Length: 449
Image (cartoon, rainbow, N blue to C red):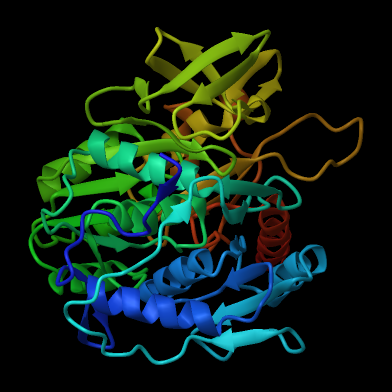
C-alpha cells in the first residue's frame, strides 16, 4: 500500500474525544484538521508543543495533511525548543498556550469549528512521507534526532492494536500520563487511537487523584498508558480506579512484584512495552506472568559480537538496539539492560537496574536510584551512591534493609534522603540533574551534622 489515511476504524459520528467539554466526532476532527492545515505557515517543519492531547493530535494530523513534518521536542523547556530551532530553522511552533520562547515563529491552535456531521474527508498520506522527527530524552547525553516515516508509524500502531486485541470500531478509550511528544506517548496515545478507532482523553494527569478523576470521566472500555513510576505512586496512595480494560507501561523497567500488585488491586492485565526512540515499540510482555519478551510482528533479530540488531516490521531501516539481550528463539528474548548499567566493585559485578529494583522493594520507599557519584580522585575507591524518597523512613533503616538484599560492596555511600527525584515527564533521570541534587543533599546533610 502506497498511502494511509490518518484515521482508520472511524465512522463520521465516531467519538475522537472531548474538547473543552464538547464531543469531537471524527467528522468534526477532520474538518478542523483540514482547516488548520490550510492555515499553517509554509514551513518544512512544525514544532508541536500542544499540551492538550486533542490539540496535539489535531496539529499532528494537520501537519501531515500540509505535507510538513512534525518536530517532537524532548522537553517543552525554552532551552530545548531553542536548541531544536537552531538545527531546524525552517520550523514554526504550534501551541495551545502562551508560554512560548520569545522571538520564535509561533502559531496558537485556532478555535475548533463545529463541522458537519456527515463530512468525513481526509486525504491519504503517502507512506514514505516524513511524518515526524523525535528526539531522545538527553538522559545519556545530547538529544539525538530520529526521523519516522508515515508508514512506520501506521504499521507500528496497527501491529500494537493487533497484539493488544484492540479491534477497530469497538469504542475503546485511552488516557495517558505521558506527553505525546515522547515516542512512547506518541505511539500509545496518538497513533494507536488514530489507527484503531479509540477515543482520547485530552489531559495528562500526574497525581494519583487526578488519574482516578480522569478515568472516571471515561466510559468503561478504558485503557491507561503510563509508567511504572506512576503506577507505584497510585498503589502507594492505596488507590482504586474505575474498571479498566488494560494498562500499558514503559520508559523504565517494571518489576514482577509491581505488575502483580497492579493486576491484583485493579483486576486488569498490565502490558509492558520495550522500545526506544530509535525504533519505537520493539516487543511486549506481561511482566506479572513472564520475564520473557516477544518481538512485535515482522521484526527479526540477530546478534553480531555483543550487539543485537533488528529489522523488518514497522522499521524503516535495520537498527542496533542499545541494550543487552539474550535471544531465546526467533520471537522471544530476555532483556539484561544497557552495557553502561553494569558496575564492578571489589571484583564483583552488579546491575544498577537490579540494585534499583531491590531499593524500591523496601516498604516505605517511594522512589530511589543508585548512581556513580562524581569522581573523587584516582586514589579513591569506587563507591555507589543513592538518592531516596522515603518520608517515613530513616536512612539507617533503609541501609539495614539493603544489607539483607544486596552484596555489601554495593551498599550506597552515601545514601541521601531527598523530597523528590528530578525526573522528566516520562520518569527518566538525567545524570546532570542527579549529581546536582546529590551535591545539594550532601551539603544539607553536612550542615545538619
